[in-house]
Image (tube, rainbow, N blue to C red; front, side, top):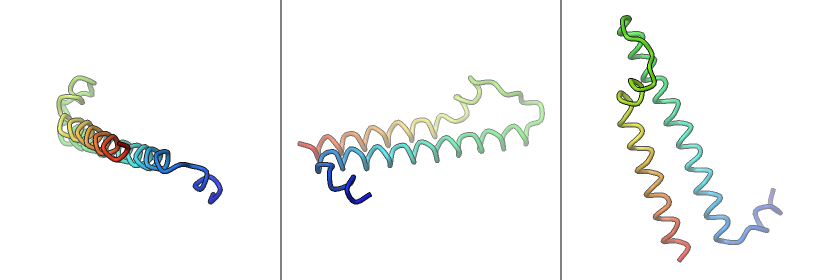
Length: 81
């Protein structure tokens, strides 16, 4: 493992760390979105699953995910200059 880390340059390490962080954050946010929508469906027995309804109800998480990706990429570009 140390050989892999030592072979990366400073820029490559930064890109790798940011990519792993964004991937982990996206997985956590996706899980939170699905759980939140499941709770909504359990509480409202008349509600049926639809993709459009899912997107409409989970807009906050989607905007939060896009904002964090934008901020992370902006910081990465600033760091690499």
